[in-house]
Amino acid sequence: MRRIFWLAMGITIGVLAVRKMTKAVESLRPDSLATKTGNALAEFGVGLRGFTDEVRLSMQQREVELRDSVGFDGVLGAKPADFPK
Image (cartoon, rainbow, N blue to C red; front, side, top):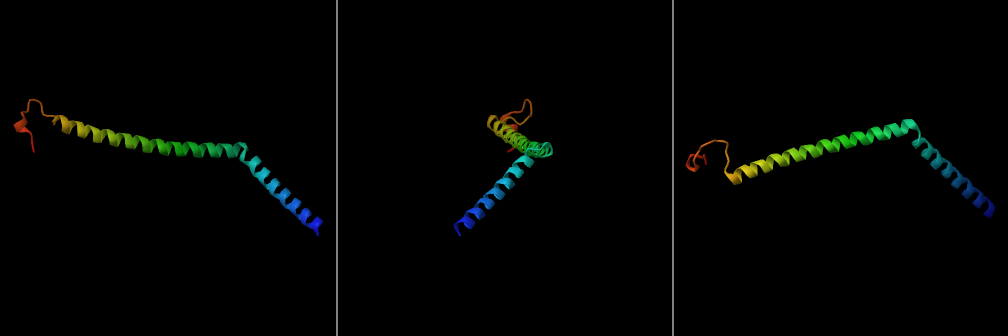
């Protein structure tokens, strides 16, 4: 009975090891590497696009804050009493 148990255990471990090795070899094939690289670049592009959108929005918000704090409304020669409220 012990021999059958250890034989079954050995066969199971062998099958699992072969499957794992096969997956590892397939993941290193050129077409698989190209797909992974393409997906990574696409994700990077999406992240970069989101980052630039956030930077633009922050720049616009900061510009509004600066204009409000300085009191600059774009009218040259205007006196403080002429500013719209």
